[in-house]
Length: 220
Image (cartoon, rainbow, N blue to C red; front, top):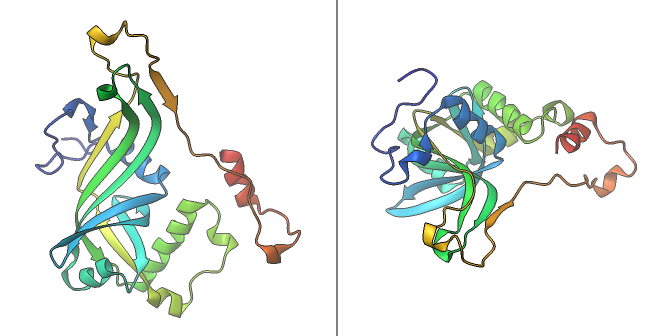
């Protein structure tokens, strides 16, 4: 296995639709970087929990952001927390001639492993700045950073990207040959995230739009 791919493991090897699964490092990073939210699954007191969280990738580490009062972060304080992190980008709705073959075009990353609480304040500060930059590039310089109280109230988990897989579906519907002559429309309805017009806070009055916000609009 080359350095350009993640090594498959028992947990990242699918039992079906194996042709959709890949381990390319650059492709995995691209999906993680494009997505704003991830969903983090873990077990607390024998019960499964899945929570949406902001995330940021720094190199081969995925950082998760939350409150120090969150159950997942309290559980991770001692010896880490086993998690399953999922990120999915939906690119289109796939309408087939048969209801059975309807599907979704998507790119999805699943990362598994033990996440550890970041205790070093310098690392935590750098990660939180990277998180702000991941949401809107250039924003870190256009806002006040966290003070000591805010830093203490914020927890960050680090998940090394080791057990990782990418699953992708693209293309038209996969109708059965016997259904191709049916009189039903089939195809793909593309979906994309739309960047709307910024809405300033009431206190800003007629303040000009910062360059990094304008750049965010233009990129959409």
